[in-house]
Length: 389
Image 1 (tube, rainbow, N blue to C red):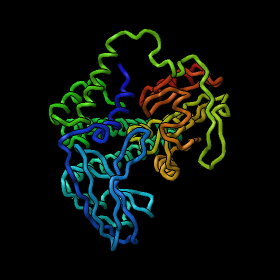
Image 2 (image 1 turned 30 degrees about the vertical axis):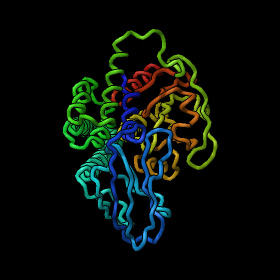
Image 3 (image 1 turned 45 degrees about the vertical axis):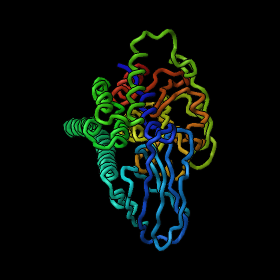
């Protein structure tokens, strides 16, 4: 079995590859619309970059009486955002048509409310709504299961709820792969591919090359397929030594991390010495991370009374979004962040190139496993807890 961490990280960067390459067939697109219940202010049209680069403002207009008009030029379809001067949140969309009409109500914060009236954006919104619903179902099912495990003589209910959680997880993965194979918009299809963490890698050998056939000429898709093929080629050659020389390996002491916690107070990894610790690198904006969170929650609830805990290390740069994700996903453990996204000190210390990523430490602070996800996390924790008794 091979790792897809780097590949999945590349997918996100390829969603905005249009801004990184030149193309003689550039096309203009216009966004006009109305936002209800909002005061007059500036509105910005931004290009999004899924790397360390900050969003780039392409056009600015005055929002008057809720109405606006913006325009930009792009070589192909990518991800963009409407951002208001006096409001923190924004509206993400795809430039799949030359003329895009937008309607929203500033008071409606649901995914269903804002409407970019184009086929690609309708597909994007439907995908996000489904993902959000399934994520909540997984979190709720995991919480019910852990609650049932605390009740004695309740083995039959635990078995039923375990099966239900497994079925929900399998259904989610099946939906993701169907989406990758059938979505008609290249940007949404690549976005769905970013959620394939935990999916059988063999399935991707058919789905990824299939994207190139379905979307010929799209630079972002072509880059994804190229990266995937390069990854397979490298993994077909036996590695000579450690390919990740900058990444701490199993058997070494984990590098110290000191960052502010959610209350703005410094906290160090070494303060958890004496326990088994899963150092979980993630971010609120990382779809695969959010999809994996129910598994981490289940592991935490199962083993927290057995000398085990989790330290969440976030690559966020927006504290409000970070805190909201912690609350929404029920991540009831210690969290720290320097709010520098990919410029975080944690990236250099641990040498990872994509998230989610984690390392499991023994009570002495030594790394005993890395990149544990889904059932692999539970199996490893069961093993070390049993051996420590």
